[in-house]
Length: 111
Length: 123
Picture 1 (cartoon, rainbow over the protein chains, first blue to last red):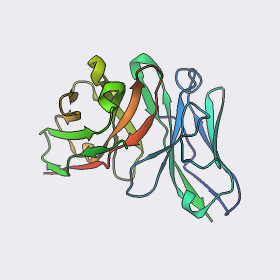
Picture 2: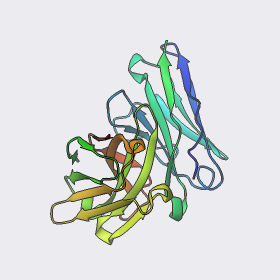
Picture 3: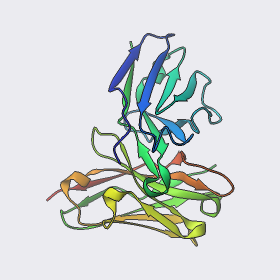
């Protein structure tokens, strides 16, 4: 099972919006509504930001939103803030044999 | 408050094995699965496998089949991940995370994470 494909980096100025894509196949992203997104600051454990494609855990700002079209899922950060600068990973359920597969990761830079 | 507390850093020789523990608080073991995820230096996250303690089910990523063993002690609420035949490429931070299963629902995400355990493989 190959890792899901994410852009290596995206950037934006404070207040702007950025979108991170996560491309898989019909066996993972496209086949199930079980895409999640994680934020990871340097030296820290990942933090769940979005699950089941669009759901936000309690405490996650509503600036973070998720969507999916076909085999590609997306995470949008609206109103970018300095503290949003981090690495972001998508993850998808991939069936009963493979179970879970992560994306390659995207570094978000706030200019 | 859910907490996952992992064991400390390890330094191992190539060819040896390492065991990392993850003690969970709350109702984790009675309702959720525990997954193991690793991250090599400067690299991305990699799912290794999961255990569902309440159902005694274990699944492994194909890449690690035959080299990883995930177990759980329900009496202490502690999960374990053992990786054998270590090589330098196994140098990584190993995380446990709650999720991959929850009773009564579909929880294919990881909502709580341990602090990570650095395993260094070096001769």
